[in-house]
Image (cartoon, rainbow, N blue to C red; front, side, top):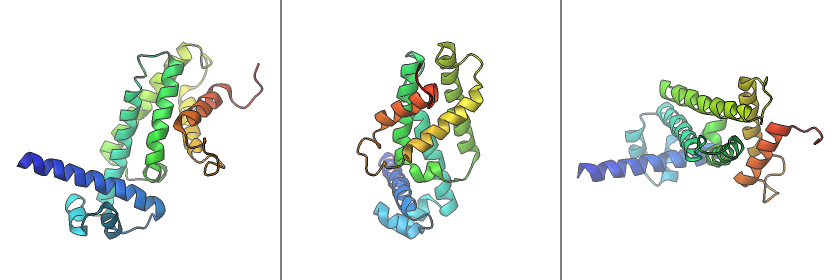
Length: 192
């Protein structure tokens, strides 16, 4: 019986987090009651899982960052050539970032768990960029920390690309990944 209750609790936490992401994306000041309603749960159930709004925001931050790590690892970046791995990771990350736009684009609480997850994301990214550099995709003297920052900026910008709401191909993570990788590796200059 304890196992069924645990599964039920996990489902309600997942429903709360997903509802919170949707509701807060529309109204960053939404109440816990509005989030509970969107999750199809009572306010009491939400408060049982999250003592207050701060606890909910912290859980959102950890959940979104863990999903980014899962997306990176799912791409199996160590088992493919760097270009293929970079493309797979980028497409997977864009899928997660698209689903968690509010949480990943707003300043969210930095608990020690969230900070550790972000450090793991950074480490995965620098490892992949190091492989790309080793395979000649990036200049041998490229500053990989700067390249990481530029890559992250490109990921964010890809999701807010002007005209994305009118262009049916714009929200496609695969098309956006190709755009991000092409821009990262070749910039906007003329092709040789």
